[in-house]
Length: 139
Image (cartoon, rainbow, N blue to C red; front, side, top):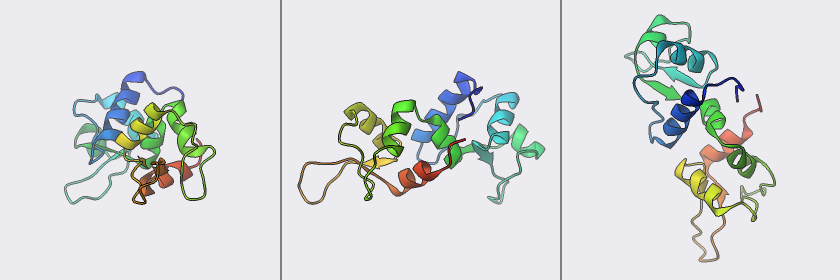
């Protein structure tokens, strides 16, 4: 995660992580848009659904920002990132000592699921999206 990311932009990334379409809130100022685009934490599409380059003026001045996988990872708190990446089983099962609030927050972001079809005690397990975000290299 960029260490110099302003807290307001971090809050926007967290909201976008919880949004089903990954859209960042409207009204982010041009400078903030530029930071998110240049860091690869968000992107903008043209009218045909193609990603615009971060340097394209259309990306900087208009259109909806959409969070990237790197943006999802950057939005995680340290406990969330640790739970998603440390001591995770081969099947994606989280460490049994992970706090329930962290599991709940990761579930709300679509990175973890807790359902267990076998009827045993539910164990938190990474989703496909959670696997992808966890596998990203640390910046």
